[in-house]
Length: 338
Image (cartoon, rainbow, N blue to C red; front, side, top):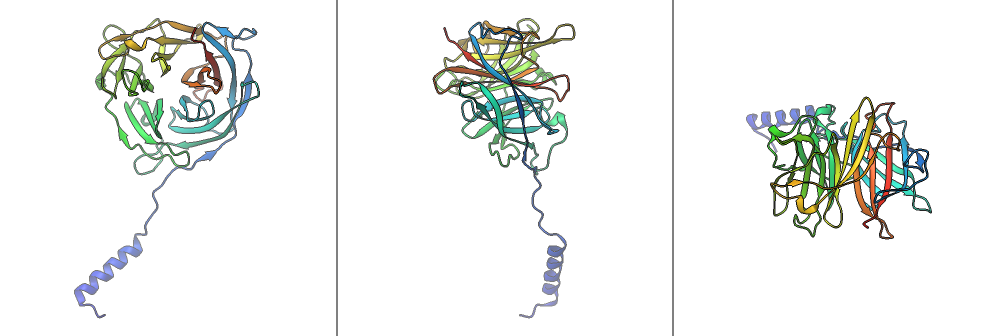
């Protein structure tokens, strides 16, 4: 077919553009498989064989190390398979996936199949600025990971794909006025409520230490039939670092305290489920407290799960801040209900 002069010029111009502008695949970040060395921890109270600490019974733990530069800074985790496969986020902007293994006595024995991937923006490019990806809280349900971020305060949702985590699919209204959130004291807890309780499995967020005028910690119900802001009574100098709902509807909170004089402390507090409601001040008793005389560090992550023998389990992780003076720990307890 013979083209007219004008049409021929348009066709030639289009061909030149096509040749000069090849289609480039969207960038992404590789999934890196790394080796984790895990030293078993058999005593929670250092130098003592006791296993019972209030209603919590220590099962075992791991001290984790790796030659991988980006391993560490674990700030939250959730099991995808109870007590086994997990997903985790780091406050340096990484996704972690792996499996906790157990020995014949049901004690944690190691970490296998560990992978990491850097978080990406909407264009699929890695995000290198920490203040943009300071991931602190994590909830998981139905193939969706909901992440709470500090500094650049937001709650975002991602589709879970261990082979290729992409940019968030949506951001959620977190109810709390943004002016009330402190830059480095934002959402440390993101968790789903009991599916059969008053909040019908809706998402609950709790800040680390964003305080109202009365000195209580801002929190909110951001999904479900009773959305709204509430607070958690602040008890002493402890800050909230994670939480998860128990099967009976109570909220188990992990808390941390630090001073140069006495080092780090951790605490588990059980918040009465009926006090988690719009406009209320949620509160509840301390279940356990531990200082540097115990196998703890900067404890930041918590999950609750049920073992195959019916035991109600509580797992904790620490954030080493990529410091040679701190450790990455995994600890496992049975929570006795009576």
